[in-house]
Length: 165
Image: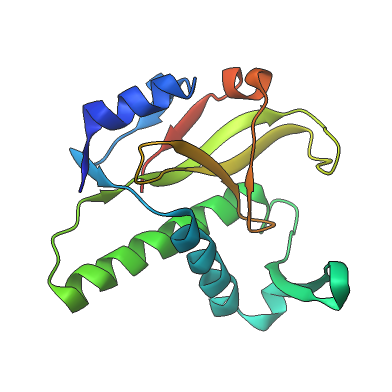
């Protein structure tokens, strides 16, 4: 159930994502479930060398492995590129293993200006992930934390570039 590029562009437009600065490499794109994106993120972080990860304590005595943040070396733009490449690799492996025809992946990095808000102290230029789900809904994902995020209208308007994996 691939999305032709024009359908994906309409979904981005409906979500108020200014996609004119996006780079498109394929004519159609496979949507992804939020569960797949989260599971891929867990697998991506686990695939990183141990020196590039750290354990973050969570509520209820739980903890989670996350990628390190190293300024200009392994920061937000590096996280989105590495995670996007990991997802594209997973989809290629799926196609090779199952024989299923796949197209491009409706997921990729984008750059925007983050506005600080409760629970999220990011501010200024930032990179994150967008993806389209099976309902053609555009969602946003933070690869540093492994969570879906909601962008404010001002943040959506501040998207300057992006691409699809």
